[in-house]
Image (cartoon, rainbow, N blue to C red; front, side):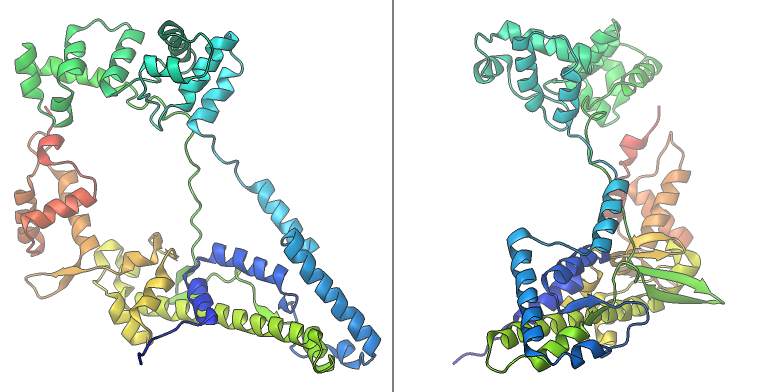
Length: 461
């Protein structure tokens, strides 16, 4: 004997729907509408139970014909895939026409330019193989010998690979297909005809020193002044370290908020964005079919199963909306100061705290806020942003992590660039100016989270 918790298919469906952002939920609803003829969108002025025509249709032959038609529609939806109503198709077509084209990959973008070049067939084939072997930065790991052996072009040699590389660099970018950053910069030096020995020495011998901002070491090693090194680095910064960056790439995904928080007459209203999540209802006509279908026949079971599925789906969507709204209301009750003051007003908040107040499990809160965004007076932010830890100040107040990070960022922005603050100095400044006591290693962690370089790397010469 053992005691186990088994999740029904309906419970799993409800959890999945709760986790869906509104755009994904809209797609899921469209799929269900196409697959289940007993499910409908509520029309303007719709009143449940208003299917008088179906209740008067007592003719068994007419009923059988309509049920046969429903079964045919159901079979076709499985055989041909989802097919929506005319107005739904029109809306989808309009959305597709207004959607941005998907971005080309690096290989696709370069291949399109190669198509208009006047290369001979063999060189074009080798060049195409090279293009398909580039990584996202535009670098090429394979050696010319490997390319000549593996490209599949009859008679390919190291010399023909070199010709293809030269053509690519002439057509696309002088450093495309470089093996590493050092070769990438050297190729651009040659392309721009820079013969300065200092520039070449920095690229060939001191890239690590450049990364760690150890400019005095470069000056000492090359016998040049610090000003000369700084000027040489200004030239290097104008080069492209990733020659493939200007080609291909991904289109940024649009962020659509699920929750909107607006200030109204001195208070804040939290509401869901409902225009993308339609209200679903059971079809009154099909409920009449269920009453009129002959007992014991397959039609009755067919209608009953779809009716049960439609009811479960409607309940799951309604539960999702209700749970998300309750959780959002609790979150912004705690974060009212954020709505009024911005990040400085953000308070520490745990998911368990909200779960206890709403009366749900913490996993429900986690699913409800996952992938959801809230439109606030201070920008559109992930709902998870408002769940954060904090540090108690000397005054007994609790400062949120995001607020502390903002103060660190402000201290760095105001520092002397020729004498930047160390992490110990930032910790001391937080204690002195804001009564916030945190360790140096915590400052380091927050600084890295903000992508702020170390004091050595920030120093200007």
